[in-house]
Image (cartoon, rainbow, N blue to C red; front, top):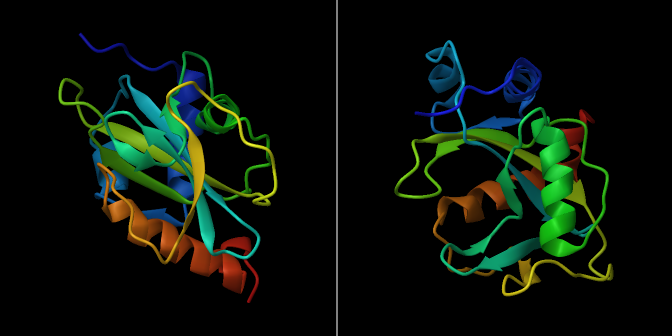
Length: 174
């Protein structure tokens, strides 16, 4: 049986889902249809360089090139999980932008139920030293390129977000 997510984590997830710049997979309706949110809950990070032309991805052994991210732990906010996963998977420390980039629903593994995923973003210089987990190297990818991923829809989503950042739209600048 799936574990119910604690109130602190759920409240933070719902608040950030409602604030997200983009919604995919009818995520807010999916969330409203669940009086209780059960694990797993995921947090991802779209790491964009200051020229808005590259994204930092990790080479996952099964999923291909994907944004850093992972499971939100018990009594951890999705935002804190995103910061932790960024550091663990890439060795990068950065300040997340105030507004979540996106909310979506996806299946990360065949044996998991669909998962609410909160996506955050950070702008980081490509000169920053990279680290991360063994066997899952991070790498900068040009947003004009095509990359192999279990989630091919992310290419367009990340490109659109980078364009919003470049115009200042994601910062509320008009």
